[in-house]
Length: 441
Image 1 (cartoon, rainbow, N blue to C red):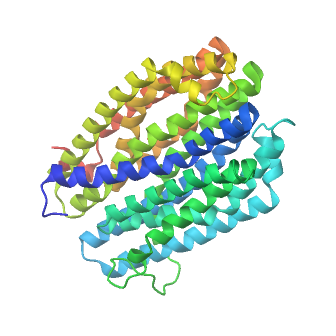
Image 2: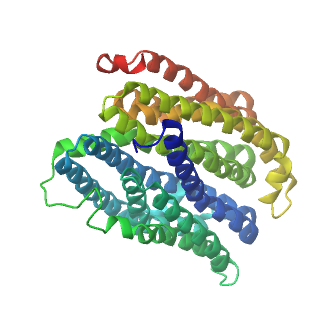
Image 3: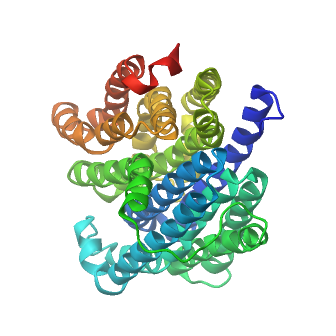
């Protein structure tokens, strides 16, 4: 990494990471499009009720991958090969443990979970099917996330990107094949999505299986310190994904009594577009992470700050372009997912697009800053920002604003929440911990 100029280095890693994250976010967006075309409003509502499960699984995978890979980068930059291998091995231990929990939930708990998420008689069977299959494919989702992070941090961001794009293309093609020619309905949509990460793992096999790679599976006892480091550094990545899932669950429960399944379907359009937009911010943050962690491990504070500035400028430029597009073209964008030409769905979705996405520059700021804190082992401020975005602030804000202004209040919940969290994040950044004070000078 050190042989390139900082901006070229940043551009290389971030462009590949962003491209890969956009491709990954298209897993669910492809389902949204094809389910809307093939199964109509009820199919779209069922999908939106089940999607939070994906956020939980993907968030868990990112927590393990980002936490382990961040520590791996620091160990690697300091020449600590034994610890590099140990953190990788412990990451796989944790992956196996959590995969078994999700699979057990898929086998025994999918029906009560579907009811808990708000599925009524009209959409229950489709919601349950989507949940069950997704949970059973949890090992593939989690391993794919782990390998993407480790392969990228081992100096091969291009292969990580290729793996993600390959799996996303597989999902898009087989979503169509399974839903339309094969007539498999929503089962076909989630089957294609579940098989997609398997493709990603296979594409990355030339790296993670070769002896010359920088991380290796070793025999080691379970060490609480290694597990703690992984979970602590990766926890903000989990919360960032949980934020999307929790927001979706909360909004669905608030929208159902206001606008019924049509309102949930309209929100599903917005939420899934939001997944793609937020994936770009995640891509910027994760692309910069190996560079920041390496600079931090080598005690190069100016480089750490420089990479953060590049990340923030990229985020702001993207936010401006996206919001202008969504505001100007809200009507045709909503119509793409409105296969039944529902006037009610169209009106709700268009208003939502214009209000909900006011949040994106603040959300981007929070995602980039939280990952930056993680990259330099400042877990506590990263946890604070992530908790506020996912639980502490967004839930009461949604309840209060929806009670005051109905659907308008729901659309404004994210902009208000992300703005408040961003203000706090700026304060935390300006007051770093004692040991890292010189890093910001």
